[in-house]
Length: 170
Image (cartoon, rainbow, N blue to C red):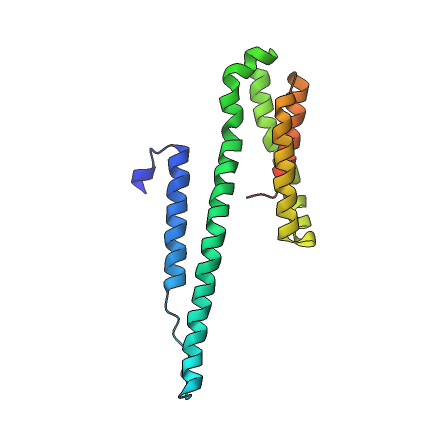
């Protein structure tokens, strides 16, 4: 898409959500041809009703999940850029150098990389509901603990733990 090439990260994310929404709408609105049937009367009507019921359920599930997924996407985006916003005053308040900041910002991805596969294996073992709740809770606690950073080492440690806590979240 040439129009999105020069867009900011936020605009690309919104564009991606629009594209995904349109694709989902096309998928749910697609007419699936029914197999040839020799049934007549009430049985034929029940087959149409079943297809309509399936479509209604899919639409209802989509409308219940999409707001939550959009909210999680927005929170994840803000989490990824929050250390950049905090840089303006954090460097002088904590006495960090530019190199220490860059190392701390990058060490997040080391924790994320190391714990991504184990987290996904545990996801299969414990189930999505429990594991995603664990990820969101750990992420919130560690992200909140970032306000307690008092120096270079604590910044490094919390950024690594934040990466490990977020592993498995897409």
